[in-house]
Length: 132
Image (cartoon, rainbow, N blue to C red; front, side, top):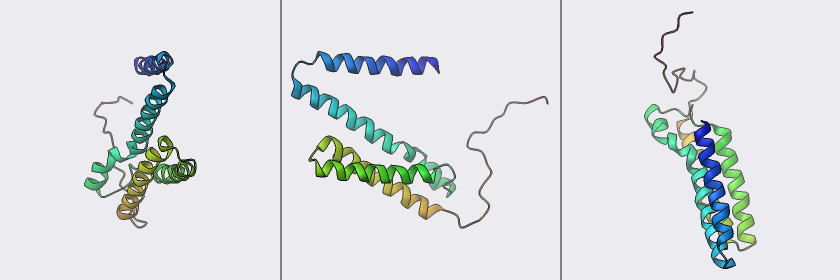
């Protein structure tokens, strides 16, 4: 865990130092803009990694509703902000985030079980023996 945290800090420092070494402002703006777009899109798409599990189990217990709703609302508000300010580095990733948020909410509404007992089967099964 410490190694992963250290790797994130090293990558972040490399991006900062690398961007400061770019002399041309327009190239620096484009480089940081594209990196930010890629990061935002991966953040918006991260809850969809469980889409296969949702479809197989026909249950949304592993996909949190509030996260999907907040993703949709936040990306929609920034999409509108980017459109009003004519900034493609804001409206492009947030437009994709809005679409992914709609997909998450549609999956949630399609696979939501109506007030039945949710499955109590854990996502990760532990096979270790405990001597209690």
